[in-house]
Amino acid sequence: MNFQTLLRVEIADTYLDTAFRRAKDAVARLRAGQLHGLRLDKSRQVELERISAVRGSLTASLNGILHSFPSLDTLPPFYNELVKCSLEYPELKQALGAINWCSSRVSQFASIYADKIKQCRDLQVISRYRREYYGRAASILKQIADQLVYLEQARKTMKEFPTVKTSLFTASIFGFPNVGKTTLLMKLTGSSPEIKDYAFTTKTLNVGNMVANNQRIQIIDTPGTLNRFDKMNAIEKQAYLVNRHLAQMIVYVFDITEPFPLDKQIALYEQVKKGRTDVLIYLSKTDVLDKKMVDDFKKKYPIVSLEQIKQQLVKKATGFRPEEIPKKV
Image (tube, rainbow, N blue to C red):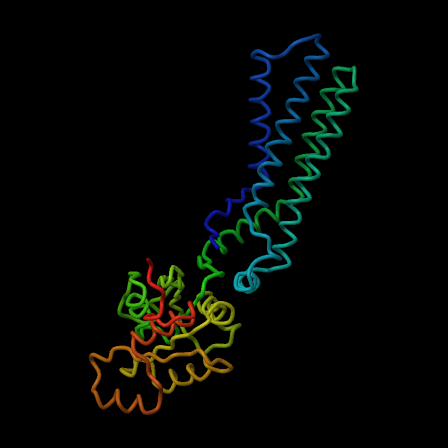
């Protein structure tokens, strides 16, 4: 899901200024060549055109916001919980409901005043009806001014959400910062995210893909944490929700050169594997480790190689071992 397409939400005055300007332009075009009949008829045409232009501009802007934001009740569980932990969920729903209400009311009043103008035979009253509609439309829009401001704040937050495919078979690479997770992602998928040699490098979820038997396997590099959920920062919460709602396999990365104390890495591993049977262990940086250290660690934990991770991913995602995948004829 991609939240980059969310429309910028302007303040109420911006939408009103745009609507009134479009009404002015529409009347100018009308007067330039399509205004016919007696003075009363011309006045009706002008005022109806103004109301129609304001109605069209405001409803298009408001409905554009509604169509831009996803339907919260039908979001996949990963994104639904991400919204709830990143934003005030009831306030977001209320704000979107206010936009829908405003669009409906602007349109309803346009119909009411258009009917009044069509039936009126007094030039001054016709003009007054149009001004009343302008006032009503402005009043209605300003009633949702706070909701518009909140939606723009929400949009900025949601644009930072990761773009992941919730329908794909997904594996996550998990572990403490700077233990080699992003390097492993690159080896598995060929993706080349920026890698720097200091802790807390991953500022967003890095996503890569393998393809086996014409099926994409999504692999997500996620930062680890020992914090409670309410103490996690935004990226840590995203990682937690990936493991909870998306990951059908987890590759836990240990680094016994100990950029983080080994006992903390073990504690996080024990936390991650609770209730799961699909957690693989990968030992990074073996090229700089003493062979005895590696052998001693293997005696305690069932380490898998890069090739074994690939085999496990392919088998679980496709139902075939790599060598069993049917060859194309």
